[in-house]
Image 1 (tube, rainbow, N blue to C red):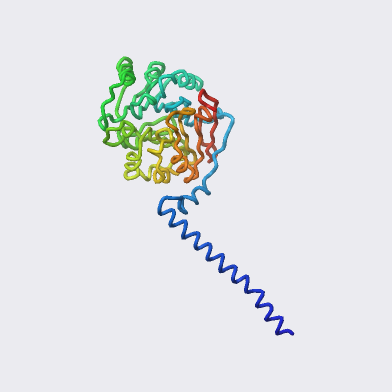
Image 2: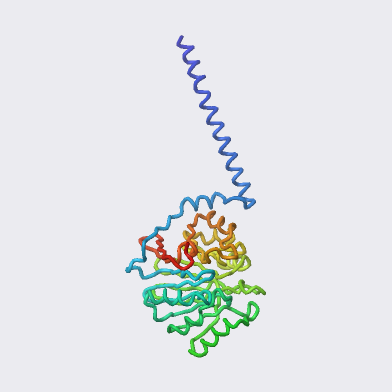
Length: 327
């Protein structure tokens, strides 16, 4: 009887052994399938999946605490761009939205007590980025204006661009062109020019790419730079691209925001500046899929209004204010 019990015991262990074999086989097949699909660019690879799982979740707050000295403000200007950099009482503006966003920009800056902009950056001379720039230059004291490298593309001839140049001349504002490696001190932080676009017939690809660093907070913004600009930055500045916050290029267009570029930036937060129900369909589905693939939280001005982002106790925080284009 004892012998029979031992044989029965061995038989009961056999299904467990078979189960382990099947689990191992299934796991190996899944790993192989992920590798094959990732190689074809159909899904994120293991590194990306691991990064997505490991990303810290940005914390939402009702408002920016008064104790915060360094922040990035994405002003709701509809279908356009306007980003305010803040550090220890100093300010810099990247682009100035559309012509109809003059009031929104001036009101936002006034609400923060801005009287001087140490720097104003024009990423490129499209009307949805410089529409209200002349008004901003007239309203505030300007330390320096940084223009894009126009030599990389066709010469702008619009009246909007000409108005900006006229105000620069009228107020004798110091002006220079963006050049890679140039740095600009701002309060506790630093603004670094990563790139000045590529040789092109497309003004989007003359966009100045820059990063902002201040007390643990980092931002990368590339204007409307498209895939050609991202490819160049990957080739020349890949180690300098990683940042907490990324301003979606070209309002979240599929002509930009490539997966490879986003992997290099590896942002916790992507902010999309676009207008509600815009005719371009921004942000595009392909870009949104890429943002998700790198585990970034997407914040949109068309849904949330103006958005402020800052770093506090090692975590990224953000606050939103309902704007004219917010849902």
